[in-house]
Image 1 (cartoon, rainbow over the protein chains, first blue to last red):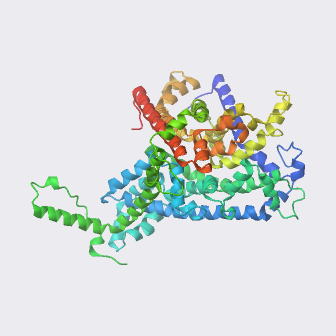
Image 2 (tube, rainbow over the protein chains, first blue to last red):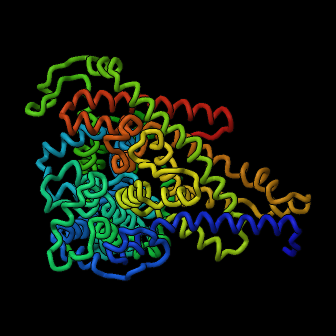
Image 3 (cartoon, chains in turn green, red):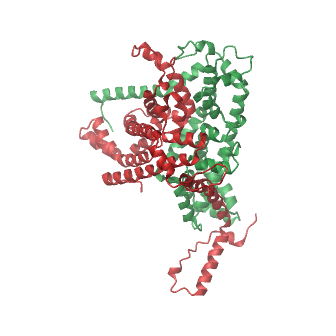
Length: 293
Length: 333
């Protein structure tokens, strides 16, 4: 539609665009601040005043991070729990969702009711802790995987998608003699990649960012993920422990603060990298979820 | 591929005894046979479904049963069923304890501030973002605005703790601007804690929470705006009289959900930002439950507090649902 901007409109646009610019700046700047300080020499950074660009550029903080056995072990745990957690969560939740989504499933309504109840009621922290303890999952890697392998909320998103798959695909496979397992793995999953990616990315972010599981269920330092490690450093100010693990060779200019920032950057980077891919899917996933939820 | 003749397409026979006039025992047996046949034909599906059901039973329903320890004196060496009943003792203890007032004040204070400031801001942000003309600029802003949502509270807490320390960026800025005369260690002073929690929560979630409103706004018919333009409506008038009423339903639903979650004062966030110095402002129900229950081992007492919280949350949800239903015919259930 053709229209000419009035003076008032132009002023509005100017202020609005400017306001948005400020919002963006406030959002992004604290992250930028961590980045430039992590790339600055630690001793020098103690003087402060590094706001836009590293003053004395240095990779020593990152060297220290990568040589610290504690940090690397924790990174390994995080990578392992994220990869294994995502695969198990997606396959298991999708499989149950496939079964629940079939028309004519005997007891199907009851199963779905049983799941819906869990959206509104739960045991909470203490009973869950007692359960995990009774299952002998304290101080075990499995505590990251098994209690997180299923989510009824994600199941609803899968189910919504599976119901829209044309029946013809499944029937063709059935005529070829496929049973439900092979239909699920060879027909349903491959055509559901958009929703699989959505759930995988969401769960991946959850697994990557979750620190609390490590705080309450894990005592063994070799089993704690990087977020739990950082939590202990950040919230309980035990940065000295961080320094203690840095081998003598590199630690000349590195400070506990600079190594902390570098660890934060290393921990955040993977999220920032998957973010563009994430973005393509999550809006849709969130919409489905919110309509149903 | 191992296969049985029955395992072909799911037989689409719905068993409806009422449809047959007066089912004889023979018919019943027939129906039963059919039902078993159908069950057998979908046995693979049933196995898949039951695996999920079993998981839900263990990880959702057993903890629900565990709630009863709130009425018992649970001891970690014995099982839940062996623990002696104590009735409402734990609840009485909590209500008569000094902690009760502090914990309630902090939980409600932080939650209500979040509700009254944190809830409308994403709506306002979405309304104004929608007015940005350049599609590319709009998309860029959106992308940037929801980045913090994907970072963990540990990272954001780390940034905050650095910024708010006595030598941090905030103090430097305020000192330069002569707004303060000497540095303040913000996280050590209880009076700043609520503000820090609210501001950082808004910072993290503003863009993300706006997504759903933007999606709702995108579905408003452009004809309405055109008609309004012809009638001489300005940008603010269009926002107020067209956009806002069009997304009223979305706002109501999210408001009900927000009320239901009012007592969830964002555990992840507060656990990172709290410290012994700001405890009088940072001790909220969830933190209290974590400390008394898991750290001090008073499982039953902590569970009573948690249960109290859940009950209040459900009542609030029902009230909010009722009110919004009356006001504008939208409700969650």
